[in-house]
Each structure stands twice: as structure tokens, then as C-alpha cells.
Length: 213
Image (cartoon, rainbow, N blue to C red):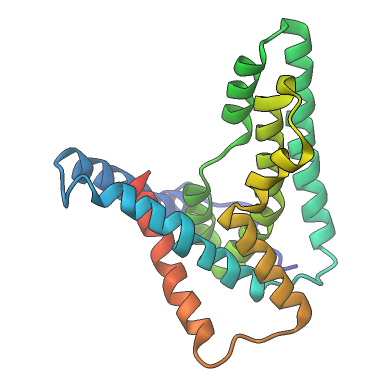
């Protein structure tokens, strides 16, 4: 696994991140002014969620160093972080006797994250290698966070395992991560221009996602 610089100066951080927030503010202002129309923004969000962002995850994971022994440490860090947050939530629920609805809402707020902003920030700071590692982390975090969130919202209703897993298995981000990992591990190469196609779709994802935040 590549070693990235340990520290980032304030000036480098500012230079890397201000364009991202400029896109967010720009999208907000465009939306407030009704440009290019109210129907555009929900359609753009759907296009990104179902096509462009999955293409980014697929392309990143299809070329990621999945056999790198350092990935075990990455997976452990993700597991410890999510596991610690989940245990803290369960302990808080027991101490405060929260209802399922309140616990579910709190779990959503604590566990869910803005994937567009996170990946855009990592890509801006650390380039393609950083984006690939972020996509790997996302492949671990998205199904886990979705499972935790669904369980938190439905635990008191005695939901079946099928009903619990179905929304996760239909999630386009999870499907894209799984497909990219399978292509990678099977040793397939994206030929005939298909790699370029996915790269073009991927390039459009994060700017559009930030505009729509």
C-alpha cells in the first residue's frame, strides 16, 4: 500500500478544499435561482446515484491493489472505527432508554457520511492513489453502515433477515463495489475502450455530486 505524506500544510489544505466548497455553494445558489429548472436537480441526483458514482467506485476497485497486505490494516481500522461508534450508540440507547425511532434517527446521523465530499476531498489532496484507497474504505463502510442503519430503524419490529438485507443488496453503490472487486480478483482487464468509458463517467460524478449537495 502506498505511503502518503503524514502531514498537510494549511495552505495546501486550503488550496485543495476551497474548490470543493465553491461547487457546493455554487450549486446552492443555482438551485435557489431556479437554474436550470426545478426538475434538473432531482434528476441529476438520481443520475449520479445510479450511474455516475457507481461507475467511479467500479473503476476504482477494478484497478485497486486488492492483494496488498496493507489492506488488512485498512479493514481493521474501518472495523474498529465503525464498531466503536456502534457500541457507543448501543450503550447510549441502553442508558437513556431511547425509542427505536429516536435511536434510528441518531444512528443515521452518527454513522452516515457525505460520500461525495469525502471522496472529493481525498482525491483533491492525495490524487488517484488516495481516491482508490478511499473507494476501498467505502466498499467496506457502505454495506456495514447500511446494515447498521436499517437494523437501528427496524429492530423493534422484528424484521426478517431477508427484509434487512434486501435494501443493502439492491444498493447501486454496494453492487458497483462488489462488481469492481470481482473483476479485479478474477484478473479481468477492461479492454476495448470500456476502461475509458468508466473513467469518463467517473470524472463527472464528484463535481455533480458536490453541486447537488
